[in-house]
Image (cartoon, rainbow, N blue to C red; front, side, top):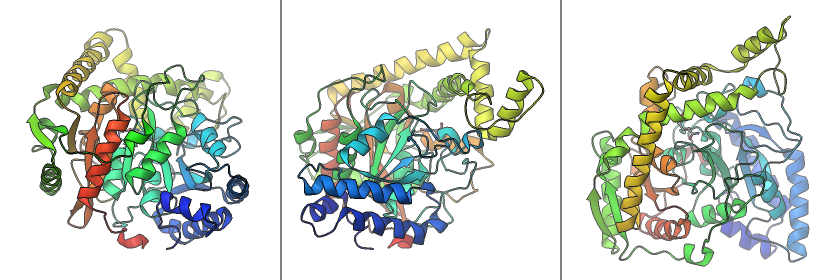
Length: 483
Ligand code: GLN
């Protein structure tokens, strides 16, 4: 699968030494997508023409000595990121055919850096779900086993990275949607500190939790993917400029680092194979000189229940804009109320409708204090407990997902089980902390993810621990269906 199986860093070296041109590299990826994506279903839209045009621009940048880490590197964006002139559907019928007239910041920064956008990837509708089965179009398939889900909601981007359909891809993580699919497909997935990456042009799901983050096959590539999109953006008032030491981030270091295992996230709620994989990975870190201690963070157990009040509440407000008047789908009626009702009931799938109902309920007078306000108090306590842990520890660690990849259809009838998929990832969103999932081995032939969470804006510390972890866990083989 040369050259698609190379890491982005290796592609960079070959582009710079003129061993390969940006157009050849792009064409090789487009061919691979053509060959494999009928089965994997990672992409909702492939940008053949614009990708080759961007590759030519990238080559000019390389030839004139203006290349950076991302120039000529093939990337893909989850289809909830606004791309000017390129369809953006959020995998929803309500945005079918919507072509944005403006550029989101992530897409803009990638374009400016000379990265080549191959296409837009599949997701659970409006990023609500953990399997991509909630996409209004089709589910994506896990390249480790086509009968299994790649996780979600950013499943398409995870599959594209895992199957080498793109070098670096991007997802959004509100409760785990980058890290959980990364764990299930055996790639690195990373959620930055809330406020580190602009949300301008990320279609809002739960605005106080959403962050854009990269998928890649190595930690080093994830760092490059992150650095290309991070930093203050005047178009997002929650996006700040905070120190980040790019050189320190690239030095692997775990010796003497104090790591806390969260008891509540590595116990019975996690399946045996994942627990074993996690414990074996911890032993490897200890052998490398890490100091590991088990601690209890009792509030973390309320993560899922708190999240499923706060996220739907914010979603119910954010999704009010899809009214049949301003964007996408319109189902005609003879009065405006029916037009909105018909459009929303035809355009939104069942998961989205359920969340709008729950969100509206918990925000309504009489229930607000009992649910929404209480959830916020729980969120504050959860964040406080995690903050206190960061006073004593460099990072907190846990498995990323309580299970390995599950069969497509297996959890659809059990919405609660699907929601528990984010048990280990939600606390980092609640506190706004940066968190990364690194593959740490296989359980019954399926990937297991290892999660590292650090204090806010300490991505540099987190990367250096993740690089050391990646070295001592060893590389996974490529997924059997994408060699
Ligand atoms: N699976 C979670 C949900 O369904 C998280 C989604 C996300 O992070 N976008 O809401």
